[in-house]
Amino acid sequence: MSAKKTDTLLNRLIAISVIFTFSWTLILLAFSHNEKASNQQQIENRNQALTTSAIVFLGLAGMINAYYAGKRAEALEKSAIADERNIELSIQNTKLNQDRLIAERFMAAIEQLGHDKVSTRTGAIYALERVAQDFPKEHWTIMEILSAFVRENAPIQVEQRQQIEEDSEPRFGRHTRVTRPEHPDDFNWLEESPKVRTDIQVALTVIGRRDSQKDPVNQKIDLRNTYIRRADLRGVDFAGADLSGSDLCGADLRNADLCGADLDKAQLCGSILYEANLQSCSLGAANLSGANLNKVKLCGANLRAANLSGASLRAADLSDANLYKANLQQATLKVANLSGAKLFLANLQSCKFGKANLQGTGLIGANLQQANLNGANLSNANLNAAKLQQAEILFANLSGASLTEANLYRANLMGANLQRAILHEANLCEANLMGANLYGANLCDVKLEGAILTGAKNLDPQQIRRALGDRTTRLPDNVEVPMHWRQTV
Image (cartoon, rainbow, N blue to C red; front, side, top):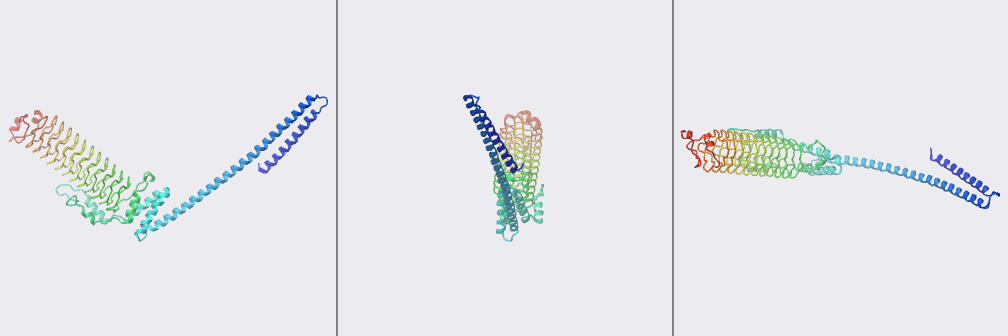
């Protein structure tokens, strides 16, 4: 029903109500003048007529007031709807203007990325960063653009990749090819390498300081096969990033977050990774020779066949890391945590493990020749068939360790704890076991020719009888030389 028809109907109802009210009032007044009625009765009739008229008028006034109140509410509702529509239109217009602004800024920045001047390209990168901050929906798109910019402008050339693959190829044995400098601490050759271009450095910085909370799920920064040698990447957030095959030699990655990153076959020789987070990172066949990895977090990381020769890993956390066939020759691992790590067939020659935690570590077939394990915790470690010739193992804890067929020729085990250690068929010829604790140790078929056991603690004569020694073996004063040893020429 239209508003005009509603008003007409209301006017008719009001007119009918007024006519009815006046008619009723006149009737009551007429009856109130009945001569036969007493004066008292006439007064009551008049009062009743007036009261009825008042009630009717009050009801009529209430109806009119309710009607106009409804009209006002209807008008307010229409006004609110109109305001809401205006707001929606304003939002739509704002979004259109915003999209237009984004498009304009995008196009301008992207055009400037291809400019000849480095300063112009650098300004374009900062402009894109501002767009990413102002418009979160475009955050990931911009990160992908900047990543592509780095990949396209700093790629590893074919010749560089071939050289890297040759240098990273593990070679063991007599004819081992040394891929590090003659002096592990000498990386002056890196100074001759050019630093990354200014615009590439800025792009890496912007990517590294992005708000990673805005990254889409299952998406990662793609910087594969990039040549970013000597880049300044301090404190960057590259968690989960793909940096496989990239050249990061001499790069500064202090306090960087590389948790879960892919660095397979990456070049990180001479790089600084002090206190970096590399948890669950993949560094398979990566080159970390001479790198500074002090206090780095590498727990659960994959370092299979990685080159860590000459690297410094003081107080590093390598718990449960996979270092199968890794090269740690001359590396420093003092006070490092290697509990539960897998170092099968690893090259640990001349490695420094002073006071390191190697509890439960797998070292089957590992090369520990001339390694320094003084004060290290090797309890329950698996050192079967390990090479420990001339190793320094003073006051180390080897309780419960398995050293079956291990080669400890001329090893220094002075004061070491070998309680309940398994040394079955191990070679301890000319080894120094002065003051060592051999309580419950399994010395069955252990070669002790020329070994020094003077002052050894808790050595049972039965243990010695099962071992293989000769006249050159020096036993504690309270232990007699077995008869079959005396017969040995």
